Image (cartoon, rainbow, N blue to C red; front, side, top):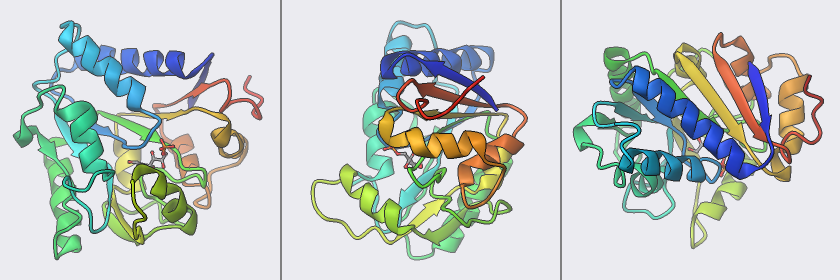
Length: 243
Ligand code: F6R
């Protein structure tokens, strides 16, 4: 895992956006998987800006979802799908046919896992996966204790994720289960980028950097990845001695 610390959130976002732009320019048909959450917002705005300036073209790329709260879909403000359509797919004018997103409201979630797995097997492996990290070390909704051999799966969310997840919604939500790509998909991606900013992530980043690979900290799986990157701002890196 290659670690780089940037001065602040803005610089971390510029670094991440430019890194993605360079890869998409080299591979305009790339399959991308993009996280929801607060961390990548500025990166997405920079990608949209670069696209408007014709510095990058995402029109031939395909996109697969990382995760979703079970029971929610694009009509629920705060869902992953709502967020990604608002922040990136709509502004980039991505053709719906190029997006495969979990339908976490459907009656048969196992079938939904299979559908998304098959999309990745057919169009993949994922070229670029952009991830955020939970304060409990989760990647996507791969919570502490997860089996690294999982592909797409449905899972009971950690209490911490249920609580922290309330920040995305304007009313109290029941966030008990998630549907997520598995660690195996993440490890099979050609390039994995994890970004983290702010003091609230400093403790988990210290654990991620210092501890050996363990499923108690799912993000440590990235240490098994041959082409993984950790981009931090100085607040997230403040408890970590990075050589
Ligand atoms: C969201 C996701 C989560 C978040 C993580 C960090 O799609 O997969 O793993 O990336 O919880 O969330 P923020 O960025 O809001 O701190």
